[in-house]
Length: 265
Ligand SMILES: C[S@@+](CC[C@H](N)C(=O)[O-])C[C@H]1O[C@@H](n2cnc3c(N)ncnc32)[C@H](O)[C@@H]1O
Image 1: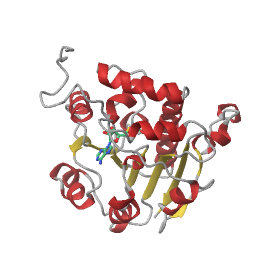
Image 2: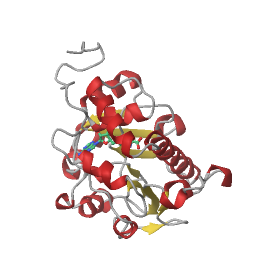
Image 3: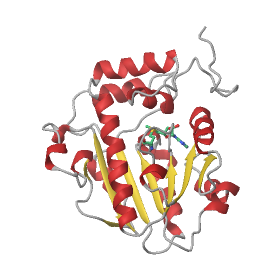
Image 4: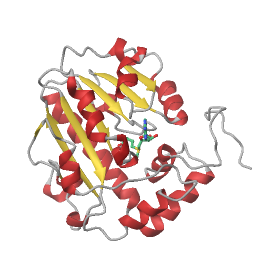
């Protein structure tokens, strides 16, 4: 049995992989356990570029946040924010108010440790599939000023939400009372035109996996933007969303296993 490190909350089951800690491993982080690494290696065996895919996803997050800062947005609600790694929202937008939300105890505890003393960057422990509970959470409601634009981020997380939880419905609830100029930022795993991705999805759907996974097609991801105006270039393979340089777009981008987009309320 592996020793429990000091940073691991007492109630965390270190024998079972978690999405947040597996993703931390893909990114080269240190907040993961043997069970997470074992699961991650199984995924990497069917999708060898998984660590690069995770890095590309984080790079999209940074490009989108920078774009929104330039557009004058200074409040971010990052749903499924994960274990903070270099380039989290508050680092890219140092003058902004940032609310991180995650249901993973390691992600929440580690985020709180890192962010202690910063009153405009807070962390709430909540299930993002319940928008009424998230928005009513005292940390969230005391921090966000919903009379001004807010960017709602759902980056690399909605593929952990099954259809019967109605992701389009709860996205609409998050955006319902936000003023014009608010935004939706979303990235999502796909198996469309991507060999190996369905095998990775099957691993996540095994029993004792971190969480079930539901990859979606481009049309299904576009449907999640119903009711908002998609910014150029629309819903595209992640590296194609406003790359900083054409050299940043990999040659195999058309089989890239994720879509991204940003929409404006
Ligand atoms: C793949 S990570 C993505 C982290 C970050 N958004 C990024 O793109 O770098 C997904 C995160 O969503 C969290 N998550 C998954 N389902 C959730 C739920 N129902 N409520 C809150 N957080 C959730 C996981 O714990 C994990 O930290």
